Amino acid sequence: MQNMDTRNELCKYAKKIVDQGLVVGPGGNISARAGDKMYLSPSGFALEEIKAEEWVEVDIPSGEITDNGYRPSSEVLMHLYGYRENPNMQAMVHTHPSHCIAFTLIAEELPIMFPDQAALVGRTAYIPYVIPTTDLLADAVAAKVNEASSILLGNHGLVTTGKNLREAFYRTQVVEESAKIYLAAKAAGTPSVLTEEEVDAIAALESEDYRIQLLQKMK
Image (cartoon, rainbow, N blue to C red; front, side, top):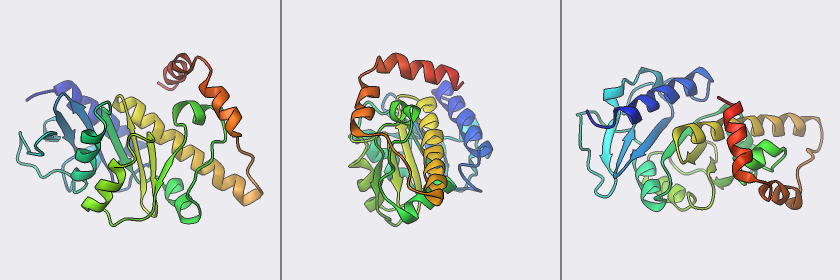
């Protein structure tokens, strides 16, 4: 069995996703890259049920399933096209966070409201509703993965990417918290958001050190 470290890491974050209520039942799918292979959740499994050996190995250049007999998630094309489009991407997390979905029912652009959101996520992309599991959705996501690390899917959920599963998972947490904050503020009045200049000022800080410190605190 190849790339057991990657498979075990997927099990770890699959459990975290379920424990935090970011998916319900067999919803959502996650993957990680190891060289020219991606490891993706199998179809029909709740994320917390997947064992290390059950993650489906897919060859990224050819799209061929190269290890076990499990069927990959129905969103396999979304992950595959994403890795092909962005060679620096090492993980993709697709979840159905309730506040993110609620946000997409009333708005498209999630404003940046606080420093951690600016530093860990930045500007969030948006894709209007597309039928799930289709190449249309896969193409739409692939077109955004070099533009943003977090993509809201209208009436559907959220896709985050990162240089590892931890980064992609933390971005999922921060975007869901951002959507929750926005909805609460909107219910009470007009949300106060950071200006372009304020967002750029955060980006101009020792940004990598700032991100590293935040990630360490979030362990």
